[in-house]
Image (cartoon, rainbow, N blue to C red; front, side, top):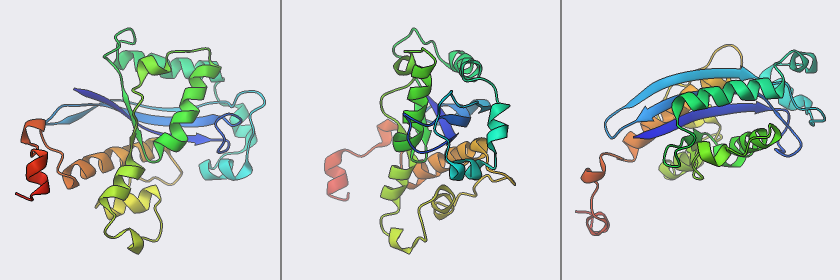
Length: 212
């Protein structure tokens, strides 16, 4: 059984060392060879750490102001809430019980911010919670769409989702949780598109290459 966290973050900028998460939303799921089941959702706001670099265009994306950020829960309190939810999903002391982090451009963007968030809150448990490998839907979608990528106007989350036949979850305002749900839908669509069935049903490589 795989444990997967579909995730999206909003941050005060693009540099994970100087900027901070101010919103994080996700959906925990458990996947077997025949099904994927949602276990828990969360949507947290976070006050940036003292001294964090704040870019106005990054706040514009989330539709918030600096005064909004001041009213958000303290870093340590929001982190404690997230860590509690993680502990509900896995046994952190069991090295074989970990979570796959999955999102759109998660490897280059979200994961470095989340890792730094753990560090800033005095936790060395990131690798006890998550696998080193992330499931980056941007890279997988690019592979699946190579034949018509040049016909797409851009490669944003919503554009890529629609190209897969997925209807993005979208409310009136930007929502990390909505994006996480869109990622979950894309994950399922990609597995179907790429023919990722049960392991015992996979063709031996020599049959794949001979097209038999």
